[in-house]
Amino acid sequence: MLTDHWANIRRLPPGVPSGPLDLSGRLEGVAETYRSIPSGRLVVLGRSGSGKTVLTLRFVLDHLRSRTPAEPVPVIFSIGAWDPTAVTLRDWLTEQLTRDHPGTAAPGPGKVSLASALVDSGRVLPVLDGFDEMADGLRRPALEALNATTLPLVLTSRPAEYAAAVAETDVLTSAAPIELTDLTLDDLDHYLPRTTRKADRSDPAAGAWQPVLKKLREPSPDGSPAPLATVLSTPLMVALARTVYSDTPEHDPAELLDTERFPGVRELEEHLLDNFLPTVYRRSRPGARGWDPERVQRWLGHLARHLTELRTPDLAWWRLGHGLRGSTRTLVTALVTALVIGLVDGALSTAFGGSLAGGVLDGTVVGLLAGLLFGLVHWFTYTVTGKDIQPSAVRLRIRGRPRSTKWRAGSRLVIGTLGGAFFGSAYGFMVGLLRALSRHAGPASALETGLVDAILFGLIFGGAAGLSFCLLGLLETPLDIVSAVSPGSVLRADRRTVLIQLVFWAPVFGTAVGLGAGVVVDLLQGHLGQLVMDPMSSLMLGTISGLGGALGYTLTLTAWGQWCLLARVWLPLTGRLPWAVAAFLDDAYQRGVLRQAGAVYQFRHARLQSRLARRRR
Image 1 (cartoon, rainbow, N blue to C red):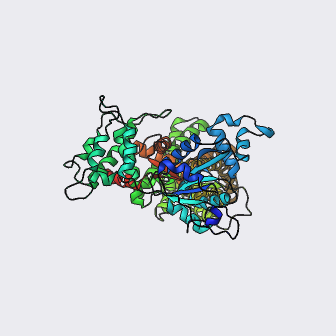
Image 2: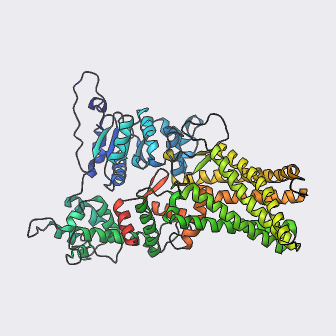
């Protein structure tokens, strides 16, 4: 059951018989329906696209029109942006008021802001739209926080999400529920004609939709409703029809009556879905950049197909690279990592050694080996196992780790040691071989020098990488994706984590390599012949290794690094996504193409996603 006891809703004293209120009605009467609820609490349930947001707008306008001075002022809040585990309801309402209405930041009574005074005195009636847009892990604490108050409010949600939250805790205390139904031709008569231009100058009341709606009321020969009437019984299709025909003067809705072009419901719905994006993106949005509708269609089609292949509606920024095949993703990661590290190594080697040829040679060797190593680590860690690179956070306490978090220091120690030893051995062998050949040494002597350097650098890099990977494992913990407020907040948090790791990794790994070089040389002195490692060589080796290792770790083993490498470089380079991916996704959200669900985006309607995915194939 999704309804509280009617005695609580009606605020009746104990022992007084109670029954349900008659809350049936039409959209234009929602304000009076709300006033008939003694508790002042209303839950509006409706399936996707049923018009919940439109209802909240109508409610606010009608309530303000008939409001008495003693009644609070209704204000719409997008509750999907609230994190009840971090901010109290009172503070969040105050913050949103201050952000959306800057005038309320002025000082009010009691040396607090006007926004705080309005919330504390009950002068604001929160209209909380989009409970279903909250992350799964936040709905229960949000409902508990709302139940901890007696604040009058209006809450909108899809039925399934609200029912799931109620099953975990309780119904919204003292709240009366209503559920939205499908639209009728009478509803269309009162709505669509008011959304479009006038078609006949001689008749001011006539518009482009009147002839269409009049035709729909005519009985068909077989008594069945016209296909267009069936299509327009759903709020989603009515919204699409308005977007395509009411807001574009070059389109005439009368063409929807053409039974030769649109013989059935499916053809009409596909037509509206196919024309939605071109219409939306032909319009300019204040403060937003313009997007080519044809490219938008291709980009969103790629995203829709990507979600369909992953069998999930959740568009997560850290999984955008999964639209590529695993082998392609690993190859791109290895090549870009090799290029970046090679350029950095070559530049630093030239700066330290003063030889451009030597710097280019060292950068080429290091870049190829580093790309191969990090590519293999990425392949075995994520591609082979099918795991995601999850956004992470940095924790600075060794003790008090949450029980739900797995310790990864042990596996990191093994991976780091083996990977570092492999890289060091290969690098040492190549450097030793080239150094001996440059002195015109014979094959036997060159081979001996290469093997000695392979052992030396294998021990240096194996120990340094194992130590650094182990410490990163101790300090790293996964982000709580379930309770994230928005995709942007997760992206910023993970970027902050990676920057901290860069600041940590570069000096730790570089110092371990530089100091380790001296220690290993001293330990093996005489056992492997006469070994030389002067302080300047140790400093150069440590500096180059620290920066190169940090960049390699970031690009291949962090969610933000993969986002930059694949979503910001490779996918735009191959035409699958725009260069400004984050801005594009946010703009699509603002235009109503995408919806936000905690840390991920979703297509506003599953029908739209399915249609785009099919067209993309």
